[in-house]
Image (cartoon, rainbow, N blue to C red; front, side, top):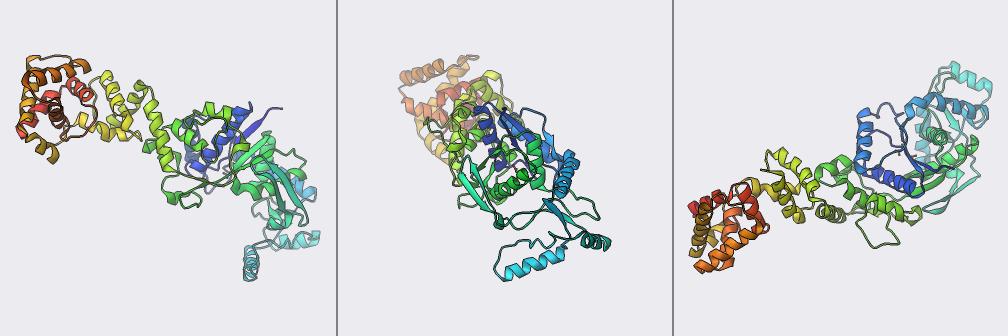
Length: 479
Ligand code: GLU
């Protein structure tokens, strides 16, 4: 039988890292077992669902490389089907109309709170007679449909991550509401637990992998599966992502949407790699830099930890920096080019852009670090105090003048690493100037300070962008 997994996001906000990680685990397991990864957009909450969020989720999945195998199912298009199943449950005696008003429910909650009890419906309308139902309706009372939950039963299933899970019927909060309020004999809009069972059955889902916050829903859903004679899928509940204080990662922790991670300069491959390690680690390899295709070969749901997974910026940053370091230079330069473009900086050639990308990549953690790292190659930085002080040494100015004259004499010389090194050697030998002094003087002229990336490689770039002479001249003028 075909193995089928799904992500069922509610488009009520931007694509969240928790949902993205659930998507990744579903996708990885689908690849591992040769199954399909499907999508269902749970957009039945008309007030909170927005099409721009659906778009954001789909784009985020694509960006992360998590392709789905069939056209996404839109839950809102299936409402009449959900209602038919509610009718079936009513006819079979598994569900009933409950006319309890909002006020009555609040009063019940208040009484339970005062007694220190958890909120639970008292199933007061489970056995109404036809006449009693008629009376409520004729008085204009609205009703919800409730699913009967046997207080005496115990629900058991084998979770692929947590092993056997047991849940008592009496701990499920009383009979379960399947639909929103409606007047007369109408059935209101179906709610999550009913819709999810009907749709997972319709989509022939064989494995449900979702966050541990759904464990009690699973217990309720199993009862609905049984009442409708549907085949049960295999359930797995993944640990939550926690912040540094051990609490569920939330919007208060600043960055939670996939868009924000992208805009900060994380690479999709790095983010997916990191997310896989949030709660999972491979048993058969020590490697931590792995593509999602590689991970899918090692991946197994049974290797996922039960405990919550702490989010670590440090680890994510390290993984991102590794991906930047290992990226093909042309690709990296093209990505960085967009950041330069936004700043209005124009590289003189593609070759130059590639060389600069190679030069700065080891000091980048985020893609946007390219801005700071490459700024001195586009804009001439001011000479800082430490640079000024260094140039006070007479040899410095002499050495800069010698380099300047050399360059003027050899006007049009195409500088490469080798001949740049030769110029330094030659001048230092002929004029008896220490190589270190000469190099540091050039560094001050180019960068305005004593720090910066490799001098020779930088010089080649300044030469190509025709700013080495300008920089040396302005330096000599300013000291
Ligand atoms: N729409 C639900 C959510 O976003 C789906 C949960 C499930 O996978 O069943 O939490």
